Length: 444
Image (cartoon, rainbow, N blue to C red):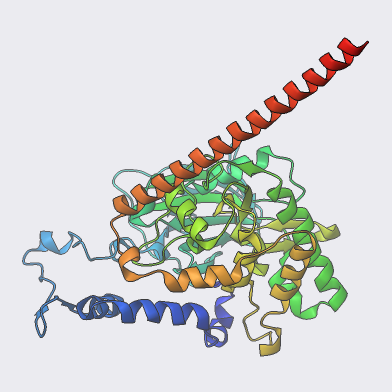
């Protein structure tokens, strides 16, 4: 599957349908940049030379002069060029693979093993030092890549016909060590009493710029794959299951800050700047939400993946599950429907769907959410996104954080003043009641 969650065989047809609102916003940001920064942005995407701020002058990347320099990444070089994410699973032999810092071995029999798949037992151990020679996975390998998405920074391989998956999450530089790890989120879900099935972590490891997990995915077929063959009643029924068994129960959990389940930062791009980089500090997220008009005093548990049909699995007997819960955290309640309306992941794209079906799933989902009391701030969100100026987007994080913390302090002061005012009203009412009782006793 690609970054949009579509099977790679369907990508060529699906990608031709552009997300026009997002594209329009992105182009607007580019045009607003100074000329040299606009050119640098395009050059960076194309891997070309970079331009300085002086007109008609260019600065080329230096060519490494020695073999040692050739292996030293420059500040502009993507780390993926050194250790490609698509090659995170490397084959050592027909029955062994390197995954992160571990060696995954397949055996016919084993006393201790991590998981079983297709009649084989898989054992993990620390990879030897130095690492053995490896090669990319062959085309006929039983370990198949099923999700290949730089858009979502997530790469997933499935082991044979089992539900075991090897997942690698790419982390941006500003996310290192501050974003809630996926395995922490999944462990938290398994300690709660939810009626839907979540992936189970078998192994987890965090490295500098990527997170490795081996996990079991819920068994069944995705709602995306089942949708073309469903009747109208079945479509509505399954969307209601998503709302009643996943969205509503999660929203019953409350939070005090826009964070992940463990208090670390929440990577939710629709609530922060997209340019030049996403800033996920809780105070900055709160500031952006307040500028949108969201009520940041009423935070509920939410994950954008639970709205996407290709992340929802329908199993036997009507069971329902979620394939990924990476971006789980506490958000303003009104953001849930807003996310459903602005997220391209809720659209049905692919050769199995006609243009008229593009918003079919989204329309049913939004209707069911609104019937259960969820509102949205779509117009305010679109205005907020349009009004994000280049100056604001390129502010140093410290300046934006200072403003966010100032706004948070002012909100806290207003809340404390409201509490004091409420306490004064209660105290005045009690005195009035006491005086009335005293007067009645005096009359008697």
